[in-house]
Length: 91
Image (cartoon, rainbow, N blue to C red; front, side, top):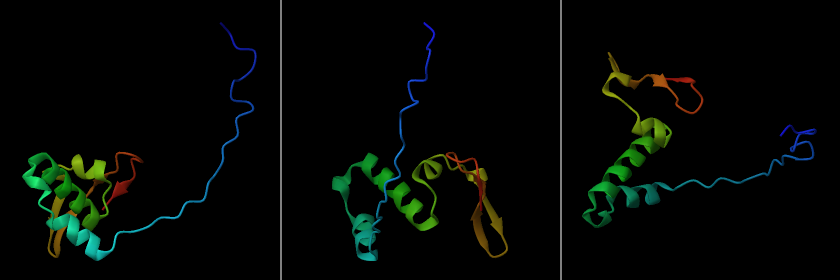
């Protein structure tokens, strides 16, 4: 049927302050060197996560990264693509 009123007219969004905590270098090193029981799937996820840590790419963007997104310049290699979440270009 047709609604006579929006069901969200009395819905109020709240902005809740959050505090972020960051991993220490020691914690990052522990993740990087953990054997993960030799589980190949966990090792792959860990490696992608570590790549994300050091490149500041979102995990999903790192998962979707293609060889064509990596470009070589005189001073090194760069990632050039659009973020999947925001469609913003990253370099």
